[in-house]
Image: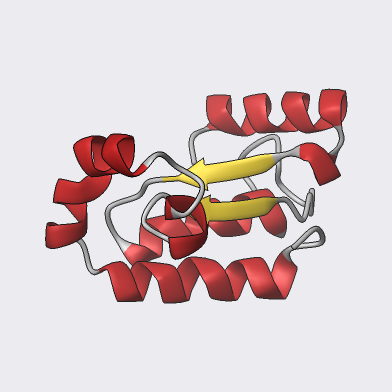
Length: 108
């Protein structure tokens, strides 16, 4: 997660409260999705950005996770994300993001 997005997440969390923020990520690989999930839950693991050492514990989901998919209009989901489900390793992404959310999330 780049520094600008970290700053935005921190500002939104400060303004609305961590319990009211849900982060939806869309990284194409489990590793990159996991790093983004870790950043908004446990803090920036690279210690380079505004969330370095800041364990926000936010709810975080990947766009291909069933929990997110269930909350989105099926036609919109299919139009915007459906094709990606065929080329991504969905199981690996779901396992990575959900394990980080379960380990570091405070508001699940």
